[in-house]
Length: 166
Image 1: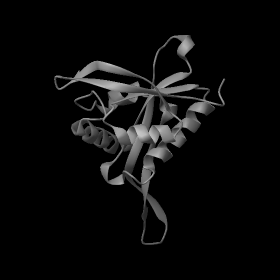
Image 2 (image 1 turned 90 degrees about the horizontal axis):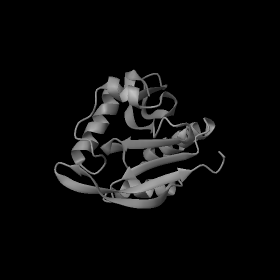
Image 3 (image 1 turned 180 degrees about the horizontal axis):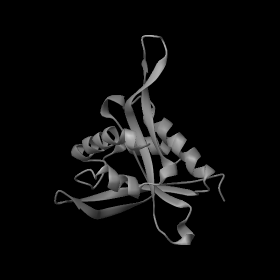
Image 4 (image 1 turned 90 degrees about the vertical axis):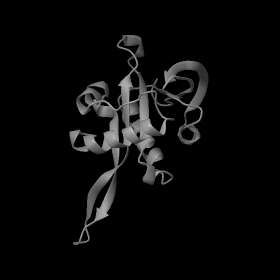
């Protein structure tokens, strides 16, 4: 994921913000703020492939993205990240989320990251199923942890511990 993908990445994020079951955020950040918050080596996009008139394939639009942020600057947590994964609405159900998670997991394990974590709204059953299929497990629930548009919401805490990074 680079600045070249910024408009589409943020458009996907804005759509999910508006849907209301993916994040506590109520507005997408600027690209500059997003870029500073996410680890450069652990953010990826899935691009659609367009067939060109000369029968070659060319990259198309962003179908989805995954990115991570540090959970702490403390040395003890150097191998722990919090991630987000989003898929464009018209691309859902096509394996894009799983492909993004698989790529992301490979990049984090190659960098020595041993735990990937996130909080998912319990109503987001598609995300919970995707993460379970990718080896994440539920480690708990935080009830009434934050407000979104004045309504208390809880999150299901999930994590994936790497079987190869020790």
